[in-house]
Image (cartoon, rainbow, N blue to C red; front, side, top):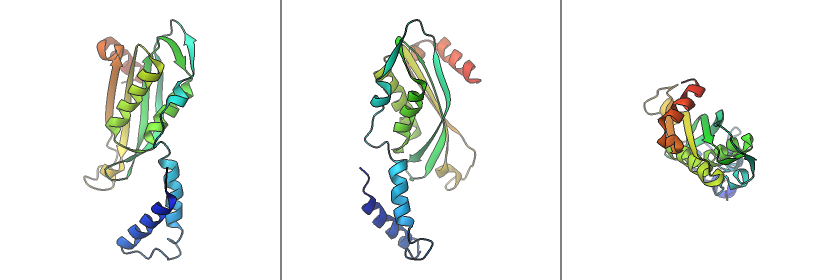
Length: 185
């Protein structure tokens, strides 16, 4: 649970720490704005995608299901700066499918917490395997990290890509190739 009062105190101290007057007109309400913003961007803390992935539908003989270009925004746990991009998911159902919006909601649950892209990719794949029990799943995440864009190495536009395969996608390279082909890669 987000503690808004602690966040407000911390932001006021941060502003003072960088040499600002936290009580000046433009900054006076910043601590409370940041606290409200953190409630939204860290809404995934303590949640699982179970509520979204538990309701499935019968789909015997269904082929590969792909949902691509799922836009997400997350926060790097190392610098507390944003990283954002797209998640691409494919799974091979084993008799049941989930509503397509539920895949995007599962991405959001994991993206809305302090995160690492590598962990985000694994968590999405593992949740789909656990709740949908498909024959296999593959998840690809591509993102730009503000910690590389606006500080440090300062390389805007650099994309980090992560890929996780489970089940038949890990065992059968032809399924991975079909996924990449359908993604246009």
